[in-house]
Structure formats: C-alpha cells, structure tokens
Amino acid sequence: MSGVSWKLDDDFKTVTITFPSTPPVAIKMDADGAGRMMQDLGEFRARMKPETPSTYQTGQKCEAVPYPAWRTEPELMQGNTVLHIRDSRFGWLHYMFSKEDTQKLITQLQAQLNARPETQSSKLN
Image 1 (cartoon, one colour):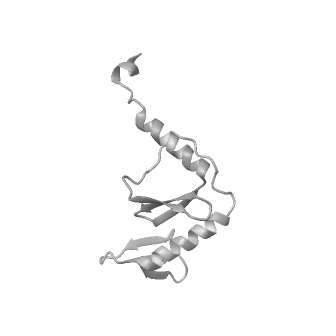
Image 2 (cartoon, rainbow, N blue to C red):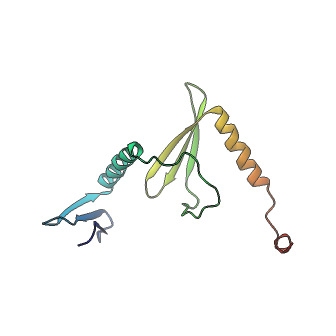
Image 3 (tube, rainbow, N blue to C red):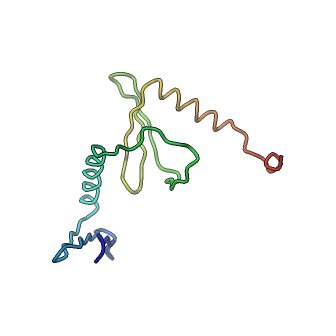
C-alpha cells in the first residue's frame, strides 16, 4: 500500500480510512466524525508553515462550489457583518467582515453585476 486509502462505504453514511502501516490500520467514521476531523485538521493547518497566502491572484483556475447557500447577519458588538456560506464538503463556514471590508465587497459585487459581458466582436478587435 503506497498511501492513505479513503473509501466511502456502501451505506453513504460512513467512510473508512486505511493507513499504510504494518499492520494496516483502518478507521471508520460517520459524517459527524469526519466533520470533527476536518475541523481539527483545519485548525492545525492554520498554525502550520508555510501559511496560506494572504492574497489571491484572480484569474487562477479553481474548483468553485456552484451556487452555495449563504446568509448574512450583523455582528452586534462592533457592527461588522458575518457571512455564512454552506460548502457541501466542509459544512457551514463563517466569516466576519469589518464595515470597511463589507463596503468593499458590496462595491466589487455591484461592479461585477453591472459589467457588460465581453461580446464576440470585441474579442476580434
């Protein structure tokens, strides 16, 4: 066995993770257990080096989650905005934006909404 093996079990309710040790070790967990493991791994990854870059170069190829459910609500202590986004892989993710960053997000989204799509004729020029 060359690496960790992941298998979604036939019941679609449990996953089996097999580690290439001697002897091999298999762990079976349900959705709650998998969610807790991902949360814990995320916490460790946040502390690891190198850090995830703080900027993102737009235009990169990425695998975006299409049409996620989302909600916003005010954070009452400082008037910030909390954005909740459902990711089918990781559950509900929660992000807090300052008033200034909320305005930047609104401005950028409005500009994208108002932008005219590039036409075929402009591509030829």
